[in-house]
Image (cartoon, rainbow, N blue to C red; front, side, top):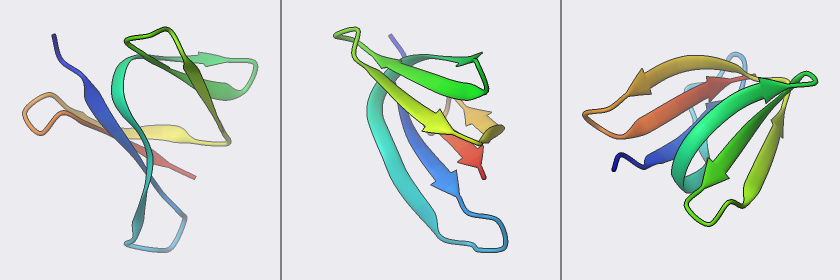
Length: 64
């Protein structure tokens, strides 16, 4: 099973912030991105778009 580590980049910066680990699913709902881990816990992230999904490095990169 592929579990992602999720990072977010702020506009205009090259720094990425860790948002969540061991994420199995991501979906958009009501203007938010919802990240779900293996236990079913949801981490909502506001005002982001998906910048990159990389299964090799197991990273999901979001951008504000």
